[in-house]
Amino acid sequence: MFLILVIVQMLFMRISWWVYYSYMTQPRYNHPAIFWNPLVRTILIWGPFVGIASLFFVAFTMTSSPWWFVAFSIIWWMIGSKLHKPSQTGILMPTLSEDGITMEAFTPDELIQDIRLHNKQNSDDRLKPNKAKN
Image (cartoon, rainbow, N blue to C red; front, side, top):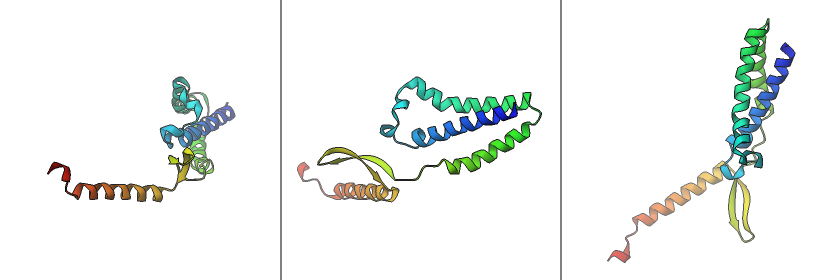
């Protein structure tokens, strides 16, 4: 029974990591197609959480060593979350180019610099007197 709980727990944690990295951390236009269906999206987001919570309940009521299950879960969460983290390639943003709208990866520093430049240009425009009102 304990081994089955551990394997199912690993599966639920792996699904929750995938949902976190492919849905929670991405902008709305960059979600995988599976999240377009509201029912599937709800199941993928809440299913692992409910499953993990119910496995803890089952471990404490039906096994003789629930604390080993808790220890394994914490260790697997700490080690496994580092293993399953995807490489950071940048933030995908739609960009208008000569070929149309394309998705390009930007680093966070490039985005911050672009936002600051945009804010500076807007503040400079506000400081200029409006000649149309005269």
